[in-house]
Amino acid sequence: MATFLSDERVSESRSVDDQETKKSYLKKVKVIRCAEGDSVEDIKFREGDVKKFMVKGISTIEFSNRIQQILFKEMETTVMLKLLGCNIGYAALYNQIISLWRPPKSFHLMDIENEYFLAKL
Image (cartoon, rainbow, N blue to C red; front, side):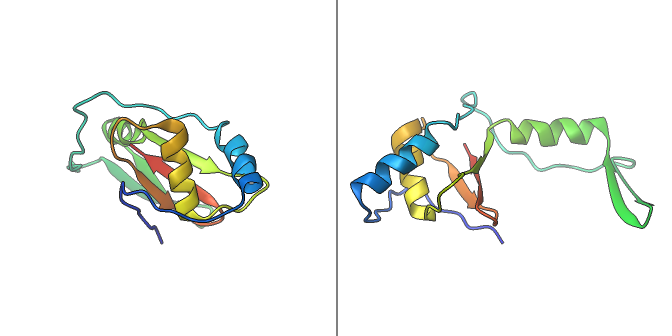
């Protein structure tokens, strides 16, 4: 289950020591910036773009090179985040990303469970 937060700032109270510790973890993460004018397009599947088969009882999906390039292009502006050694709230992480990265445009932050997050510009 994924959750999104808009580009509005969210406040959360916490101690100064706690803020400094969390900032040190966030400074290790880099953001990939995208070129202006990039847009999201619908993927149109053609015959042979997706192949499904079983390998040793496990379902496998294989994409054509064209579909792989489309998917990779969408992932160029996505960063996976895993904060090691601390639990930080969703709203606190969002605010820290805004203050440290200063993204040029709005972004989406998605909680993908097990303390992993995706940030997409």
